[in-house]
Length: 297
Image 1 (cartoon, rainbow, N blue to C red):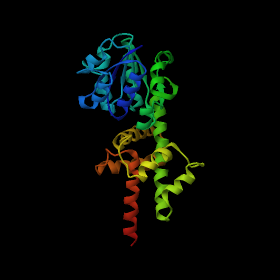
Image 2 (cartoon, one colour):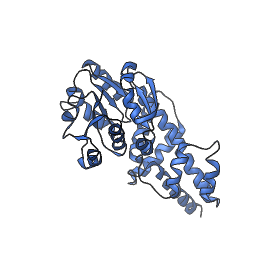
Image 3 (cartoon, helix red, strand yellow):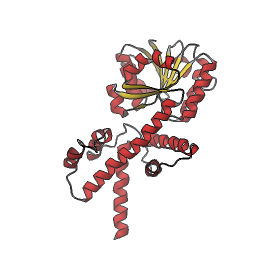
Image 4 (cartoon, helix red, strand yellow):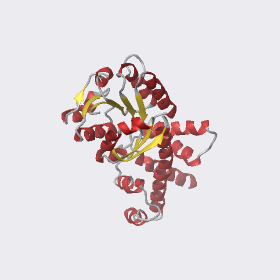
C-alpha cells in the first residue's frame, strides 16, 4: 500500500501530498496546471502528464479536486479512473462532493473489483499543512481499515462513518455547523466594533469561554489582519452549501442558518469575491452595516 496516485494539487492537495511524502509513500501526481505541482515535484513527487499515467500500477488513488463536475470528469469516461485502474485498487475521493455521486463511484467501482471510499476532510489549509485534518470516511469497513495508514499520514481525527456516501453526509453536517460558527464570529466582531470595544481584547475574553471555537481561534485573527487569503475558498464553500441544501430539500426539512449563510456567500461570489477565504464573510457584514446606516439616515 505504498504506491499512491494523487490527482488535484490545490490549496489542500499540495500539503496532503507533502505529508504523504514525509511518511515515506511514493506519490505520483497529476493536476490540470503543472505549475501548481512544482513544489511537491521538488520534494519527491513524480509528475504525470495525464490521469491514466498517474493511476497506472498504483495501490491507492486519491482525488482532491474542486467540484462534483470535476469528480465526474476524473472518475468516469474512457480516460477516467474507473475505466483504467487495475482490479484490487483502492480509490479515495477526498473532495467534498455529492453523497449521491460517492455512492455512484462506489457502485461502479465494485463492478470492476475496485474499492471506493468517500473521505472528505475538515481543518482548512492549517490542518492540511500540519497533518491534523479531520477525515470522515464512507464505504466498506475493510477498505477503510486497509487504508488507515494513509489517513493517519494526513489527519488526526479519523472516523469511519458507515456505508458509501456517509462520509459526504457527515461533511455536509460539518459545513452546516461551520455556517453558524463563522457567521457567529463575524457578528460578534461587528457588534464589538459598533459598540467601541477593542476587538482583540474582546476576542481574548470570549474565545476562552463557552463561545470559543476553531473558527474563532483560527479565522478571527485573520479577519483582524484583513488577511482574506483562502485557506478554504468562498466559491468552494458555496458549492458545499448548495449540496447540503439539495440534500435537505430531498428530506423535506428546513435549516434557517444554512439558508441565510448560503445566501450571504452566494452574494459575495456573485460580486466577484469567490476566491477569498471564508473568513472574508466579514466584508458582507461591513457592507451591510454601512448600507443599513445609509438607509436609516
